View 1: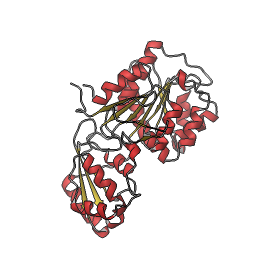
View 2: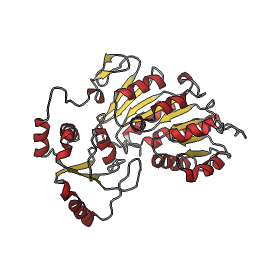
View 3: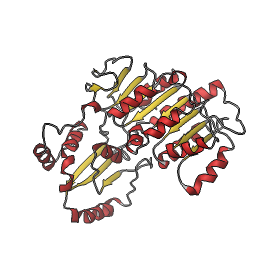
Length: 355
């Protein structure tokens, strides 16, 4: 059964169109970009593996090794019993030699974190001249982690120009940096696909914001653990059946909050997110109350009060996360569902599943 995101993204990539997608976490995007890549490689035939320098047909960049491992597992699953070889590169001294040895068997689909990939490229084990498919997963997270120079170096290191490759970018938010990156890496007629509201959270997540004192947080966490059992929280991981995420310390940035609670409520399932809000989180009140309202969640009175008290002429959530805001790439203003410049825009608001 296809999710709505997959219903629109699969035909786009199978039709050799570039894709820029702002989708909530858990929308099925990993399968949405891996399946077209595998299809194209199988149709065109996997290239023969060279002995000295290997030239993967597809490159998937991810911000963390946890996410890279997750994508690699999915790629291995989808390419099972084919001639397609998948490989993974991520940082860490303990696995460096092991990854090099595995590369000697060649690869058609390479999943990597930017830093480690540059190290391997500099040593000549891999070349990107044959890379026809480029995927940037969680692009906003990579930019937040300072990987933009590495990403640009990778793309400029012998990779075919954007006119000769298929490129897909995925991001939970749509800041100016992401818009600029899309302009530089994607063909002018790329498809922009938004699932839900850009920068918002899934309505499948029941969000609870609790006003607490700093010294009470540990006690409240222990109470939750006693009720719920073991809680696993990790950024960039797709741990099956995570039902409850606890923000013991709220981040200072609303985008980080979106990524954190996105570990639950994935792929149409329901989940819960509990956040401990203290006086030091007051600066987050306006963005958080707006985000809760967008997701049809109850906004606590204390949060509304703090948001109203903190409202100043310059304290507004960035409009470029929503459609109807200024498009930084061409200096024009676009509205939802319209064509801006040469890009095509789709917004999906229906149920996440296609029956």
